[in-house]
Length: 390
Image (cartoon, rainbow, N blue to C red; front, top):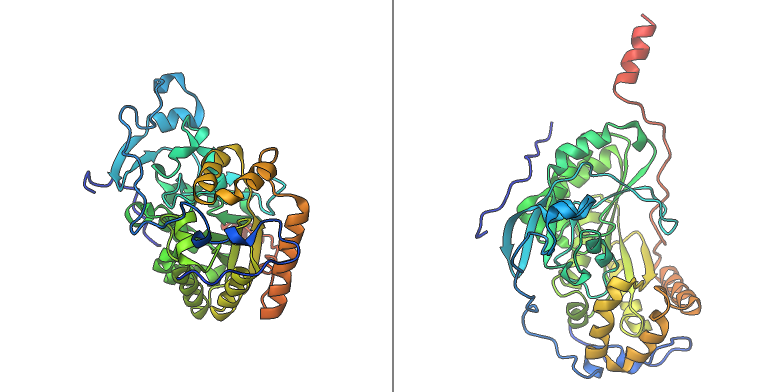
């Protein structure tokens, strides 16, 4: 049986910009704002951005006492601080379950797993910032206060023993990245995958921006031999400078493409999620073509897009960023996202058609093959049937 120690508390110390693309027919943003070199205040720092220092007081930085809170907010406010580094605090969050039930019509699965709440990659556009509000925190603290779910392996083992998972797809990393920097120290994702590797007949996907997924390559191969496994590597642009602006602490695009290549060489099904396509920044034909070509060269089996989705908590962070770094886009963003979380339908159709054409050009599928629906049995059921026929 694979081993998976209980989460431990850490010690206290613990591409160059291409030439300006030409204007395309349907794009609703000016291409003059497509890259940092064409915008005011778009200089890229030589080092990663400085985040505000950890706040003092209660672990969740909530002024109210934990006793006055309820649910996840109360758990967060009482969580023990395990470490603090790079301007980020890490807390151990006690939870009752690892498998989450998702009722959204926007996704084709019902079960999700997010080993962490918050994500240190600090992507400017991250839609999941609103999840920190459930804990009584501001979405701006999403990358500065990371919560590690305690006893992740043990809880996953218990959750997998439930008959409710039979025939269901389990999506890992739907809100926060399972291979963000905290994984190196706390290993919650590894603990979960070890439990998955002990079983057969599951359907699992992993979504990440990190090449750290390669650390678990042997484990992923084992899972692939016994279950359906798909690894989605999210890549928004091939332009390293632009990626650093949009995704301050995520690995470079070339490292992510290399991760796709190594996963495919190891026999693991892997593809590229072009998520999100950021209007006016990553949507030009030159960038998307280069991204699709690099995905093909890396052996990606699929290329799946999704246009930027901005909930209010994300708008509070992303729109000021656009106004500062890409002021020529600010008005259009206010018009598009001031009243809704989605870009206009016409624009979304345009991007879908553009990606479809690139998939055909480079011979890439749109998504993984649909998982095979099977009726899985508990280990006890065959024994019971055998006893009845004796």
